[in-house]
Image (cartoon, rainbow, N blue to C red; front, side, top):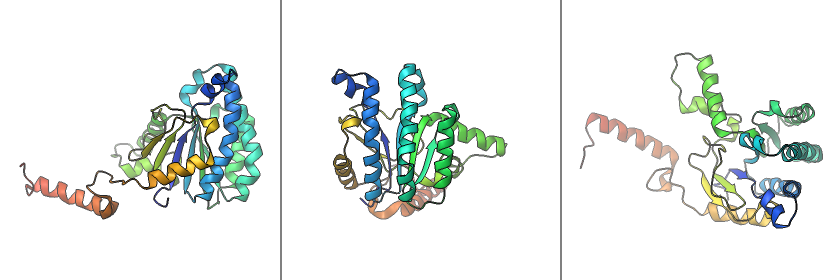
Amino acid sequence: MSKIKHVAIIMDGNGRWANQRLRPRIWGHVRGSAVVSQIVQAANDFDLKALTLYAFSTENWSRPLEEVSTLFKLLKKFLEKEKKRIIENNIKFKVIGEIENLPKQTINLINEIESLTSNATGLNLTFAFSYGGRAEILRAVNNFTTQNPGKALTEQDINSLMYRPETGDVDLMIRTGGEHRVSNFLLWQMAYSELYFTPTKWPDFTYNEFEKILEKVANRERRFGNVSSQSGLIDSSERAEANRTNFMKGTITDV
């Protein structure tokens, strides 16, 4: 599993899981929140560099108020419960998104844990809450153009202005619940991500299934647009630049 360092998960299916059991959607969220701890533990055990969990999107604000309120409460409850374990396991914690819209007590708790773990060197654990991928990219572009009027943007510039640049690109995105969409999640970071969609709804997602997915995806060949992954990303980048230069000089012609 060494090739996979950053995993992002869309934790989907809570509401449908509850409805299938003739329970309210909120019950599914409560049961789903209990799964988060074991998946964070798994990421730590598997020596991942980063785990990013999609907890609440900007589009989720349109859900019923009771459901939104429950999700806020569950986030706060999780942080209160897991704060000690996060610190003890050397996990560097952060919440990304428009967190200014969260309740003040929750914001204070987020800020406290982020501060206490700012020097941690273990797993980078990120919760995406009130988050949208397009909004993150727009934020980065607007910040750059405000600070550097008239200057052209580079990929490195945008990378550095993402909410959490230290986590890098996503190697694997998992979506539970049977849907086959990325739903505005980490759009910039997932440019070359492997995608894995499982029918398992989030409350039924387990440590063992997570491990099996990692093992399966680790055996995929990731070519990043190249013929073979064996030559490596640096060689591929250098070859691409050489080919572009030769093409402009006329060395490479149409066949």
